[in-house]
Length: 263
Length: 58
Image (tube, rainbow over all chains, first blue to last red; front, side, top):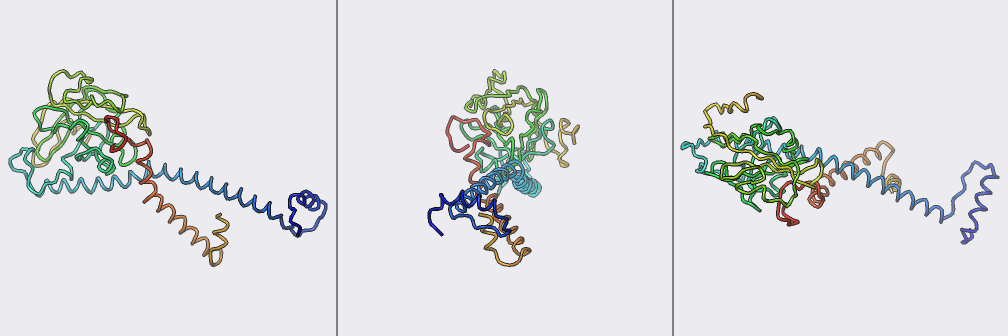
């Protein structure tokens, strides 16, 4: 075969047309190389598309599976711990021995948003939130605890993926109950204000007196934050509540009336 | 690329199809277990907290 392949190509094509031989002619090395390059490029594009599709499946489905499993395990660990080691003095600020707050401090119930109880753990890092839980802020503004005399109990959780515990935060209306359950106490809050969109740098919403909610004096507040709009992290969605009352947990762990309508 | 892999797999069509399936599943496993968890925090889809503008941590 001569090495001047380019000059030969048209001749080959016309020869191929005129001839009716059924045997396929070998394409020139240059054409073969081009065909290989194009097909590898095409296969890479298809692979890239499949990988992106898999990433969507991972983000919106698989992370939920993993996180819900983890949250379920951790939640039952906390409940078992509560049953095993009754805290007799009924004061949440003195936890029973061998209690590790990393396990979770209690459960958030927001019937308007979800029928699930959401385990609450310390911290808002991804390592915490990816476990399908809500976390209370340690920085930039440290959260108060529900049992504190006053302050703002500020929480964050995922809107999508990783359990998506605050997925339906937009279903919460002003006046809806937000209940936090600890070992000994139900803390019943009522939604007082909603901020559907704010800057992700707006740390004011976590302030002990969150003024944007209309609060003017020290009190016992709760703040839920997550990202908005759905599937992005462009802004933050904030829901505030004010403590209405507390209720002691009885032996049956009967939920307060705010939760009973839905259960 | 995939044709090259196919030609280099041993066995008849059935065996090759089985090996291909295993390879594909292995690739998906590696993606779900290692690649995606690594890539996800680098993408701006999952920041849910308010912060003071640090890029990391949240």
